[in-house]
Length: 283
Image (cartoon, rainbow, N blue to C red):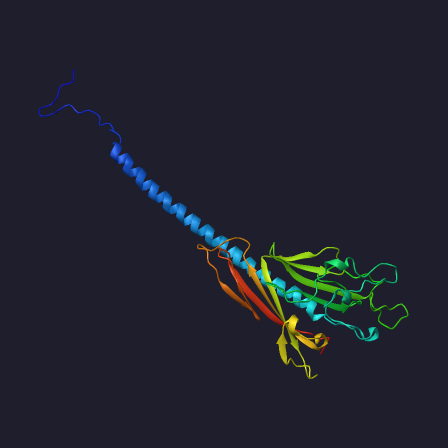
């Protein structure tokens, strides 16, 4: 038998009694607040990342569009010395696109029906340019190559057909899909250059006194038969993000050269890109 000393009492092990319902509810509320904060931070970070990606893609699309159009425009009117003078540098009528036979019996144009005539359109313009192909310049705006049998030769030849050596390019926007299209003479269908392009506008720098300096810029509707006097072209494109990135829908007005465009009220980011291209082969 265990005897207790004087003033000594029995002691029993202390067991944990557990959490009360109130303590459990308080812990759950604190956990929910922490979880909400983490979720909010994640969503905010995710949205910022998506917006950065979309803005970066928008800028890349804008620069790409200007680069491709500018490259084709710079070749406008190109013709080697032995080819003679090109009667038309722009596609202003359907008859400007000449489907001719090359030396090997093939044709220089795959499909004459895909080209758009250079003109001012509601919302977006169209531009068509023409140049000769030789062993230096032989691709259309899609990158497709003119057959070697169609290209102009380095020296005059009895088989040096200038009509068969022509390369045609036409640029326009498909308003239902917001895609910029290129119709090239070596392609049977128009090719997509970039998505998210809502409008493209052109102004033509006309030299009226023969000094190779622009005297006025005008649109295609007011050029009044002075196509062979065009020495530079201004380009402006309105590009939008491919996904909605703004937190609130809004409508904004954009100025593209001589045209004002009001965007629909939505959450897409938009920007205008512009440049001026000198036509080196007409100076």
